[in-house]
Image (cartoon, rainbow, N blue to C red):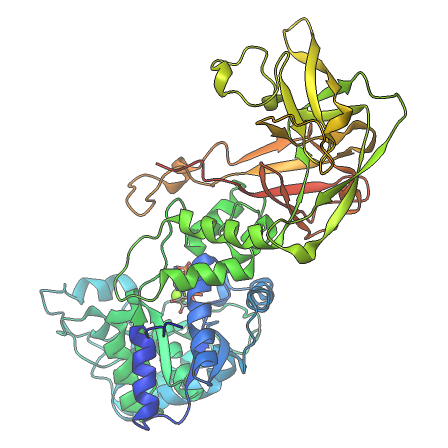
Length: 550
Ligand code: ATP
Ligand code: MG
Ligand code: MG
């Protein structure tokens, strides 16, 4: 077997273990509970949990919950269930908010070292003196406050003496650094907001930069992996750890997952939910883990896809067709084939006795012998798909399906020959008539006849009705990073079509939420959560073939 080569992060870890720098590794997945996880997060999850698995280390789940006004326990719960669904188990479950007291002490320590100060400038006033990447900034007039004064003001901030925005705590670093993040970044801001875990205990909250690295360090995270946009934050990450003389977690950046035809930004996905463009965070068109799960994507397919994408140091855009391909491959192996007719038309076999029924044997999954066979009842009246019949096929010699005087096989049953049809006043075909050849039963064919077309069918007497939600890509634009107008202008108006005409074979009458099948020659479908005792609802997970191919 070919030995897999290590990506750059695995190489680094391998070296750190071999050199004895670490005895074991500790990673973490650090979501902010301000929305549902999306397919981009799956990459970070697979990476962090996958590395811990591969190198025998540990991976924590840590909620970076430092923006109380945007966060909620609903998000915490969905994140936990999504990670479990993907098949990962975290070691510690932590919250940056659990460290608020410790983080406050870290801030006090910085003030005592003369490395942090309370600033009274408003955001606007500070921006005016901050300078630009090519121009040094000026120092805030409050930068020279004494340690004692800073300690007192910071304590007063904590005690609620000031209003939102009146004061902030800044690191005292370098107002002329070429890295704008090193120009006295904010460590704490005042927010008189209730927190979903600490309620009203705090009215000052640490910024991402102050909470993140210090939380890593508290948890003794050896390898802190984040996406490339945080590369410019790394000097600050290292400065804080070094000034506080705490456990030296090391930050390493990797490319985020961007997908064609897909939005991977919680903020924008929230907009879609709030403005009603989708039915919710778990709408099957959403690229959220909850959405694609409901749609019928599987953990195995997602993991395989993420593995294929790999870990790079440069941002790019991955073709969503690669994800869809992984889903098809996985479902091809795992799902049973059944007959589902989306656009049915009735076919009457005129030489079949009125009440006669015959039991036929159907193969559940040609890719998986263990899936076995099932019985199907065949009778005088069946539905076939309207698209499988043409009165006047444009290229008659290439049309292998049904038409006047044409012969096809009904799968697992008999060869039939079309003898006529009825039309309504609009020219729509209402019934097709055919005769079957008794010598042609599948598996026992003694006729010697050969036909090129095999059609799916559903017995009229045993047919099950269902609502089929035909989902397609939510956006019709390939590269949504390149657009200049509102991303919502790029929504695909045909991303959902509800089909209530469809008929399914009788074996599906007891289908359960979460069941997944392939409707032969049509696509993969999953029984949706909206299913009730009276109504079966299927989601189309994906078509059998890619119809978007350029
Ligand atoms: P968004 O931009 O959608 O709000 P985020 O980065 O703010 O995402 P977090 O909750 O902070 O969301 O993310 C948790 C972890 O997941 C972070 O380490 C982040 O870098 C990573 N992550 C987020 N989006 C992606 C992505 N598209 N590809 C890979 N990793 C991602
Ligand atoms: Mg983030
Ligand atoms: Mg964010």
